[in-house]
Amino acid sequence: MGATTLKVLVVDDEPGMQTGVERALRDYAVHIADVNEDVRFEVEAVGSGEEALERIEHRSEPPQLLLLDHMLPGMTGLAVLDRLAGKDLELLTIMITAYASLETAVTATKRGAYDFLAKPFTPAELKNVIQKAAARLLLARQARALARERHQVRFQFISVLAHELKAPLGAVEGYLAIMRDRAAGDAIGDYDEAIGRCLARVEGMRKLILDLLDLTKIESGQRARDIAPLDLCEVVRQTLETYRPEADARRIALRFAPAGPVPMEADRGELEVILNNLVSNAVKYNRDGGSVTVECAAEHGVVTIGVADTGIGIGPDDVKKLFGDFVRIKNEKTRKITGSGLGLAILKKLALLNGGDVAVESAPDAGTRFTVTLGQRQASK
Image 1 (cartoon, rainbow, N blue to C red):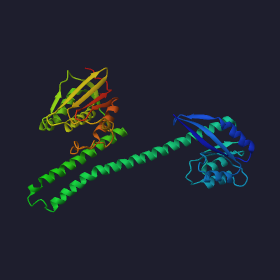
Image 2 (image 1 turned 180 degrees about the vertical axis):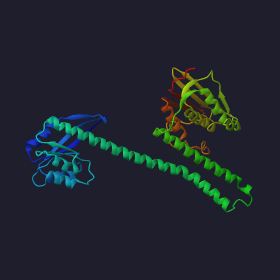
Image 3 (image 1 turned 60 degrees about the horizontal axis):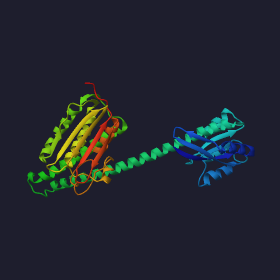
Image 4 (image 1 turned 90 degrees about the vertical axis):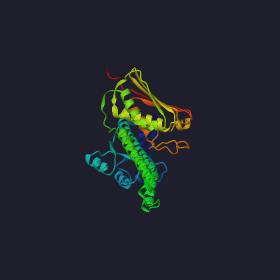
């Protein structure tokens, strides 16, 4: 919970009115529940519109709330509103007048006033309108902050995406230039390696795009879910069969020996995404001749999936970064391993979506173990 002090400028040529407002707001504090902020008020008073404009336009810390009398010597309150119109100010104006009429209220509102307070008013009436104005101002402040944050996130996202696509696009362009110029020879077979590398790069970009679509659907809540009874063990077996050819080519043993079925209710597609990321990483970052061990169990309504490998492992500093968007641990051991850098971020979000989480234990050259918990209830047998 934060604490905020808002500056209030009272513009009224009656000293008694100035003193009354200052006294009413001097020790007044209010909690704005919508933004979880405690607000206090710092009051300053002037007796003319000209003085008000001087403080608003030329002070390094101008007021945020303006209590503006309609009838003033020199400039009227409406004239002050006209001068402030169109200026980029964090300022809400509450019009004060002894001539409370619908016409004056409408005119003041059209010229930018937030609210209207008719003389004579009680301290309670003053505090009520000040509280509403403070809530409105802080909500607007929060909205601006969120808009800036979204803009910054979007900029960072596009920058990272452009960086991730730049290298594979450059490689494909280079290989195509070699083929166009017949630089490797005149026979089509001379370009088999270049074609293969182009296809690998295109596949990498396709995976990046599909992972991005998955990520945005999950974060926006637009991913359709089909919660149904299933056996987690059957999903695990299917996933292992998918990666068995890649594992066999590197003599990596895939081990899974469940004690029995693990019935649960979940979205099968989400489980497949979780297991695909876990098993594919366990194979990719493993050593030739190593092993991947998968375990799963359900107890007290909590489903646990464990995937351990005998691979290259990672250090504690890198473990902290694992679940960020576009994060890939880059070193001499991982230099040739491809990936979008989004798989573990998606896995984490899916675990949270299912009321669970993911943990990792790893050390360099000592393998890695991921443990995913899911809060889905078990299906009835």
